[in-house]
Image 1 (cartoon, each protein chain N blue to C red):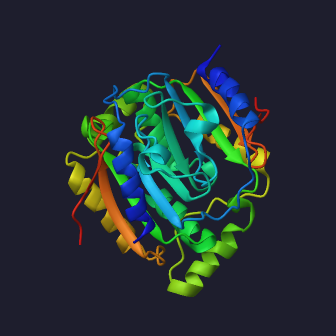
Image 2 (image 1 turned 90 degrees about the horizontal axis):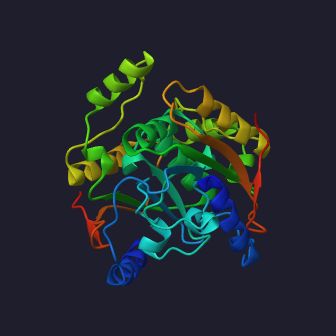
Length: 164
Length: 164
């Protein structure tokens, strides 16, 4: 039995207690952009209830074209206005470099990715980098609040990163 | 007070009950790729505990370069092998076309995005499209299980999409 099968069994219990459906647009008008890290249960960390906020996640919680795509759809079609960005301590993205990662792939499969791995060496600075990429995008125009945080995996606390 | 401020207050309660830290690599070796939809609380829907599985999310739960980047990092650096893909009923991506979305942006800000919005008109077929993009990527080489599902926002149930 795979873990996928175990999770499908869990879903049967979830569905048995389910009380939907909720409306499509996020009721709190928030989009959260966070790292994919397994320890970062975004709904629990922020006390988000189902239906309130979009949650976008990727390796590092970085901002590439695809996060701009998701945020543009979130704001333009579904009415979100606040953006919360979350990186975290002990992040895998701090443990390698783009060059080494791409070389390891090329060595194994013979093809070098055309994309950057988006590794970083300074958490706070990468939060600011991501905030700047959002702020400078011509496609993200409805933002009323844009703030960035580092989640501490040892304490569960969010620390805001200074940005202006 | 913004919603962001309310969520930060919630985080204080979360941190007060927090019992970390957990290890960095996902203990169940799973990566979930799902839509950003506010009603889809992936941890609850699948019964995922903190620390078990990577969670990658975007508008639609589609597969672009950035999801391949996240999955490559997940598999190569953090040892995941199972991939679970989740789209859902009543998805915003079913309500528009790429051309209309890009034209509305161009009309407003004068710049046409260089990226596709990745809208789709058939849920099951887009799950298969996403699965195919993962399977055909030369950078995703450690997969032992790759399955796709549609989450029903009215019942909370996952329905598997046939794929081979």
